[in-house]
Structures are given as structure tokens and as C-alpha cells.
Image (cartoon, rainbow, N blue to C red; front, side, top):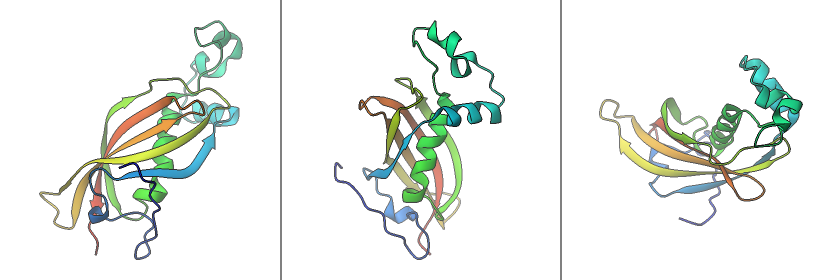
Length: 161
């Protein structure tokens, strides 16, 4: 599916119910985000990650990248977080896990990211008749249209009440 999707609130929930998440659905999220130095520093501090590749401009200048990299787990959190308002807000039971996370290109301070989510699998839950399991593929691209993050997330989703 190549068409943009606008997500309307449903019965007080901003997200989509299991029945509204067909395989092949692609949501291009309107929210974009320019990553700042403060984002990277705060994330590294909150996660106790002292990696100089993220924090030390002098160290990073001597690497193959030539500058500091944004912590990849910040990017992963951002790509999933941005998706929530359009997909799972108020309609998810729980995250079940992540598969196949990849960071094909680095993210640098000042990069502007755009996000999309595709439903790649969906099935009824075998143990919960009120829920289904959806596999989302979340993707982020930078301002040069390079894929910088891709991950698959399995979520237990409420069926429409």
C-alpha cells in the first residue's frame, strides 16, 4: 500500500483496534523530529551509557564517522514512540517483543527523521478471544532519505469492544 493514511480517533481511543490493522497497511506518520545534542546527551545519561562515540566530539572526530553518533537505542525508542499515536494508543494490551532490529545508516546530531509503520502480520490470539497479535515494521529515514532504523514489533492488540 503506497497511499498515505490518516488515523481518526475511534471510540475514545486514538489508536486502531486489531480489526483495523490489516496486513499491508502503511501509516506515514505526520510527526517528524530533528535530533538534538540534548536528546543524545540526556538519553546516554538516563541509560548510563558512557560510550565516547556518542558523547566525546574529539574522540568521535577520529572515527570513520567523523562526528558523534546518536545512540541507536534512542533512535529505536523514537521510531516506536512516534508510531503510538497513530497505531496503538489506547488499543494495545502489551508489547510482546521486538525482532530484526537494524540500523543501516547512522544518525547524527541535527538529522531530521521521518517515520512510517507497516502491518506485516496479524492473527487472532489463540488464548485471548478479545485480542489479536499484530507485527508492525517501524522504519525511520533521515533527511537524505536513508533508512536509519528498521524494527519489527509484536503487539497484543485489543479487538473492537
